[in-house]
Length: 362
Image (cartoon, rainbow, N blue to C red; front, side, top):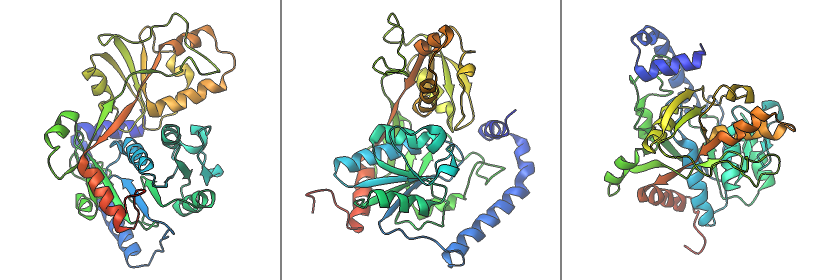
């Protein structure tokens, strides 16, 4: 069994054997503390960008809703006519090709799946590189007009100085047994939350009850199901007699390679689907052959997985009849982050402190 999958399942059910790893967690915690202090004291050098940096991250391993949050913030800033860019380490991409700018035509195998999703949704200026300094320099060389850069998942990357930190906390997962890796799934101790703005990722019904509070909250709202390969795409199209939608009571294959697939499965169930669950490790590289095993029912995937599957389909010139049939059954469930007013108010205060204003708001 895949080690990542084994550990994820153990963390989710808080398996008793994890406590045998506690000495490793103590060592991990000590090394994490020493590393952070070394940056604070200037023993390790850090890079200060010429424009403000906003880091979006989490203290847990696995999905917390960070990518939808980044997309929502980018779209909000674009509406405010604030020139924003994004950087990422480009996990899952080809580091030998980095630093690289992310274009609408970029492939997940080159720049990573999440950067492809972010740029495909927002068309934001974006670059990727494990070395965040190089990513920033590449981005600013191409887009010197930028006023703000959002760093995707760089919370523990202390080699990069930052002006704003937002930490996403997923209430569905919580903090498990509260232990650091590998006993638990915390990258840093919970005391780290005191140093940044905390965005509480709640279920939609929880967010409504907290709407009047000062807490920064977000929830994920499912959008309308879409065909993974729309009819207007040029390389392939769904069969002419394919259904335009899936009945909510239908049985479906839910295929997910995200950090916390349980949320995806539960969302489909709340929409009325009878779900056959197929969890894969985060950032999993699917093959078309693997999808052939999911017969008879529609196949629903996440937006992040969809960018990789679309790339595979684009590379195929002559698909067999069985692959054409798979295309007809592939669907995507997009989600959007819904932020509380307090999120936007906090962001506005932080940006104004950095002398970044929406157009005509001075």
